[in-house]
Length: 220
View 1 (cartoon, rainbow, N blue to C red):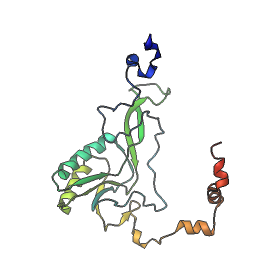
View 2: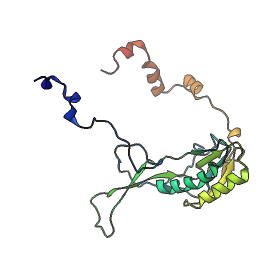
View 3: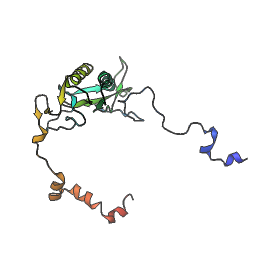
View 4: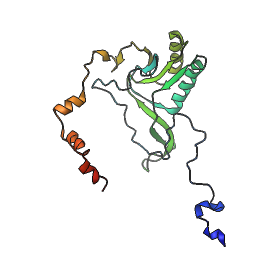
């Protein structure tokens, strides 16, 4: 009689609570997405404006970057190169490996001798588009010698498509197949001052939205 008064979510017969369970048999390069959205195949971008985003060392002394034309790297390929480098990192004192790529593009595969049309096929693996000059891995440690890091990245490069090179903190930034740039020579620009002197319409609207009068009616 009293069992009907117990809320349904507290009843022992309701089964497993609606929580997101951990995904087994996965790997660290698989993004934590509950749904694999199918994307266009796309082409690896070719940077023509001299952008150095992702082309510089940010965390360690030594790194590995792409020297040849842009490639598509799968999560399985990156995982094999990762395991090759970790054999060296585990022997270091406070050794650490930084992984700079995120495989966030889902790839679908169809069976052999399949007729044209009817979609991309089922999800198969994750991959990332890597332009020329992109940093793939960074490595550092208290007792890490340059020759040891160079040999570890050389072995990792054999697991991946394309040609890779060893870089240090004082290396020039690669912005193309045959072009380099020194970030120290680039003039530092304060974009906030430029917007304050010559504000755009979008910037003025953003400043206006912070007024208390407009915040009262936000979300209606």
